Every structure is written in structure tokens, then in C-alpha cells.
Image 1 (tube, helix red, strand yellow):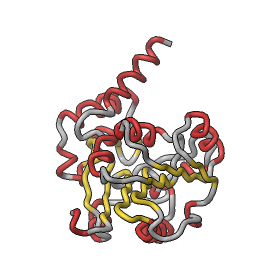
Image 2 (cartoon, rainbow, N blue to C red):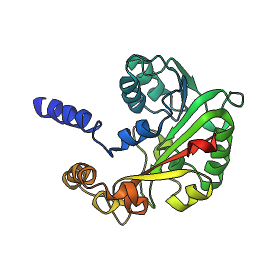
Image 3 (cartoon, rainbow, N blue to C red):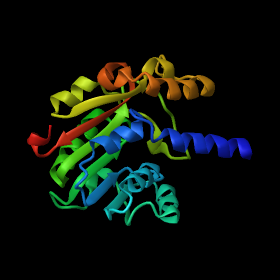
Length: 223
């Protein structure tokens, strides 16, 4: 039990490191935001970190996911102000409803043509930004948590997002995390987690990254 607690504490501490995946999301987020839509919110871990980073600032947050057990977990942890159980292809919101739209580690679970259609819809819903994260290149993943939607259905590269008008930065070194598209062992992955943030090559060269954080600014003067 103590070993597990130590690992959890180290992981939480690592989320504050420069060039960490979570740090990039917060770094690029518009700090004047008052509302966030978290599309495919999962268990809400990233939203908990974001709220902690904003500290005293009150932000209205909505989490959307089609897997009910994740939403029940979010409700228990009070990660969002409102939680909605719906398919992300039919979001029940009007255009320009939220300052920032988050879609983190979601689009790789969709067929590419479906994901592109959703990305276009997210840009309509946002007043300030759309922030998307996804693995770089092929990253195999099967069902997790008895959730068939966790299976990866598509792969993406930085150039695709640049063509869509997104600014792209990388996090983590792909070669340390993956071998032929499959995750490396736990020990190597944990080592990679540490080393890739000490030597942040992936930030400047997202083609080398394990994950990329892609930011679309509705006001082009923000780029």
C-alpha cells in the first residue's frame, strides 16, 4: 500500500514539471477562460489538475462522455459542474457556447472521417480555443475498463493538425514509450516518463513525441 501511495505522489508531483503533458495543456489554455467543455472527459483527472492550477478562479465546467461508469466516477470526485451522458457526435450545445473546448485523448478512438467531422463541430462551439491531444502515429490499444470505446481506431501526425490551423507541440519521446506501435514495459515507460521531460526534444519536434497537444485559436491574433 505504501509503495502504491508513493507512486501516486510521484506521478502527481510530475504533472507540474515543465513540458509535461498536463503542463502543456494548461500552458496553452487561455487564462481568461470562464467556461470549459471537456469532450470525452473519462474519469476527469485532467480537469482536476486544471482546476487546481487555476486555484481561486471560478470556472464553469461541463464533462461529456458516453461511458456511464466514468461519469459516475466524475460525479463522486466532483470533477465537473455538470456531467452529460451522450455521444460526442451529437453534442447538445449551440455555437460559441464555451470559451475553451478540450478533447483530450479522444479522437484516436474514432474513425478518421468521424473525428474530422467532430473537430469541425468543436471549432464552432468554441469562443476562444479548441485543445486536442492524441498520440503521434500508430498507438495500439484495445478495450479498457470494459469500455469498447477505449479501442484505438485511427492514428494522427502533427502535419494533419497544422493543416487544420492548429499549433502543435509534443510531449514525451515516442521511441521510449512505444515499440512498433505497442506500449513498452512498465519500467521502461516510467523511465521514459521522467527522461522525456528532462530532455524536452519532443516539445520542439512533435514528430518525435509520444503525444501531441494541438491548439486552435478562434482569434488568429492569439497565435
